[in-house]
Structure formats: structure tokens, C-alpha cells
Length: 354
Image (cartoon, rainbow, N blue to C red; front, side, top):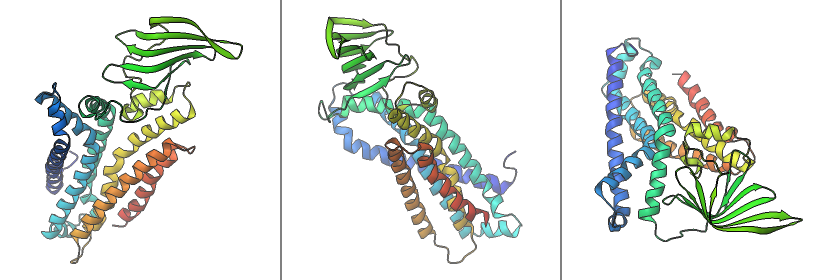
């Protein structure tokens, strides 16, 4: 059995119970705040239903799950170790010749479970929940028809062709002002490009070909079926990279038809989703040593304050690193993993000394 001692099982269960309690409490606060902001708009829509609202908050839970798990784990460790310190349980364990590293084992096991849950969430639940939220906001929470000026977007197809479009409507699964660039001499333009079950249909289509140095329109169609555009049935090719699963990002990264900027964006989100689940392990390395020391003057308040500020600063750094990795020539591997490695090294050395 992984946890063979009674005191290990007690620490494990107490920490696990506190994580569930804090997780429920924090998410309840998020629901209240979100509903107070968006509730009027949601209920004002004629197609709103209770089941749809429940579905929205169910998906919101998975969007915030990784952040909430790390935060509640941090709070649970502080609560469990401070209580053990106050009741002299830590002193009793140390007097029984149980080392600090052995006491940390239940926390590392929970941290490992949280990391696995975070990976699973990023792979299966987070992408679908984020796409659902985007669609929900588009339909129920959008203030105006065009909230911001859209920039042209590019999709690189497997055969080397490109789709350039102005806007993608998730509700109708339709592109607006789309260009299908088969090669440098063959371009198709459609005012609307709709994606049905197994076909791509364009409305008000013009076919342009290069003649000398200029393009000339040779054909026009009110409706045209594009048989040269192949779709991936397992994913929506127009989903932002943030909405993609880890395996899908791996697949996109192996494609040879993407430009360097798009490759940087793919690698940035891929490394971000691979790195962030390790936060729970870093939390144990960082917060365990100051709470395990023998001292009558130990200040739980200041430890908690610095821990929460550190948690916020770390996530701010990682979000900034993600933005920097997307828009720089430097490798996303270095930019996104460097903070993780440095923080792990600093707190890991401190942990080794306990």
C-alpha cells in the first residue's frame, strides 16, 4: 500500500477533504460573481433555459479546474500543517524519528494525482468546455454584432493549400469573406463558406487565375461545392490553439505546411499545457519547508500571505511567458520552461536542506 502508516493516511485524508471543501467554496463564489454580472443578459435571451445555464457553469468548472485545484491544494497544505504545528503533532512525529521528507510524502502523492487530473483536463475536458463557453458568449452575452475589428486568419491545409478568412461564426459554422488559395496561380473567393456534414459549400464564389502578373476572374457561381477542401472530422480546424487538446497540438506541430508564426503559437500553447500541471509539485517544494520548521514564532499569517502572493505572481509570469512565446523568435521551450525550472531549482534546494 502506498500509505501504510496511520499518520500518513490521516494527513492524506485531511488534505483531500480540505481540497474538496475549498474547491466547492471557491467555485460557488465564482458562480455567484459570474451570475451577478451576466445573469440579466442570459435570462433576457428568449432561448435561455435552466439546463443551459447549468451546462454553462458545468463547463466553466472544467475551464477553471486546473487553477482551482492548485489554489485549493495550496490552502489545504497550509491548513493541515499549521494545525499539526499548533497541536504539536509535527513535534511528536519528529520525536518518533520520522523525517520531514517522509512527512511530505502524502502531499507529494496528492500533488501527483492533481498533476494527472490537470493533464487529463487539458486533453479532454478543457478544450470542449472552452469552445462551449465561446459559443455561449457569442450567442447570449455578446453586446453588439461586431465587438472588435477582425483581422484576417489563415488555416494551412494538409495538401499545402490555404484558407484565408475574415471571420468565423461558430454558431453557423461559417466563414465570411474567405479565400481558398490552392497555389500561387489559382485562388477562389467566397462571400460565405459553410461547412456541412461532409462538404464545403461556398456562396457567391469567384474563381481567379493568374495571367501574366495580374489575376483575372474566369468563373462566378452563386453556389459552389469545394471538393478540394478536406476537413478533420475529429476537431474543428477553426478553433483557437487555446481550445485544442494536447494531442491535437502535437499533431499540428508535426505539420509541414504551417508558417513560423503559427508554429510558435502552437508550441507556446503545447508547452504551456505540458508545464502548468507541475504547479502542484512546486507548491509542495515551496510551502512545505517553512511550515515544518521548529519555531515558537512561526507566523501562519505571513506564510499564507506570501504563499498566495507567490501563487498569483507565478501565474502572472506564466501567462506573460505564454504571450511572449507566441510573439517572439526565441524558442517557446525556453521561455515557458525556464520559470518552472528556476523555481523548482530554488525551492528544491531549500527542500533538500530540511
